[in-house]
Length: 379
Image (cartoon, rainbow, N blue to C red; front, side, top):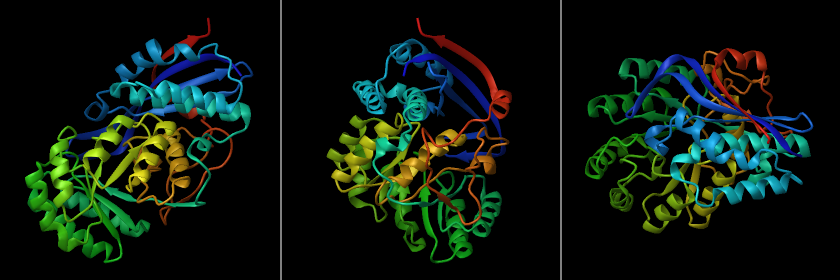
């Protein structure tokens, strides 16, 4: 197998509603897709949704990194088998800058997708064997103010989510009222957790988490700014609620540092910010070796491609705390897959099978959301 053509596609997809949290408000998905073609005509797709406040990446920087640095070694390269592709991906992770993790993800997923099709292997092979055939996903409530958030909670209740994450951190009184009402509406058996998206200092976080103990929360995600590692150490040692890191975690070096400093209880692994499936596996395995557990996170605005990658991660990870993603056309005005991965009532999804990422892109659905294309060819 030889990769002969690579295209970098900048995409924009309108949302059905604005999604807000402490760091951003979004009304459209703005991402980068990579499309690769091999010498036999197999086509593979990858995706990233870069976040400047997580890995310091933007769609423009991702395009530049792929075009100038990451993609050229793959063009014209002879790949002997699926394992050869994986070994080359893993070698490329050594020394990967933090501000190229999303870029690496888009390229890596495209390589795994096309190699999986060429050699009839699932991209999920890099994660190990499947451990479940069904994935229970979480509902997520954005920080839209109490009135709108309560409407979303009611929809989540009707949809059948047994696991729910609420965005908090903007206003103490609104947070208190939201949590109280969420617990009332969703009942005592719903597994509630919160995400502060870097909103607090460790002193504020400890005070707020003490206040929240009556609500039976299972975890708090990224309560402090991503660089406040010493604050996370202090909070993790004293918090009554387990601390999950998100924005603070992207690279394997991040993972090792957080583990060595005991700066969290668990990891939130989002495939895009963590550099793809191979690095997600490395982070997961480092966590498990240290006695930490993981949740699968999702970038707001993912298409079917990152949803598929998340599905593969969730179905091949033992002891997964929570799974997020596959919101598809619940949030997006349109999606690009021939297969329908958008969550259905009941909030559970079947584990994907088949070669590559296990999904196919519909070119007619893709074309209207592409705003620019940069093409590269071997030689």
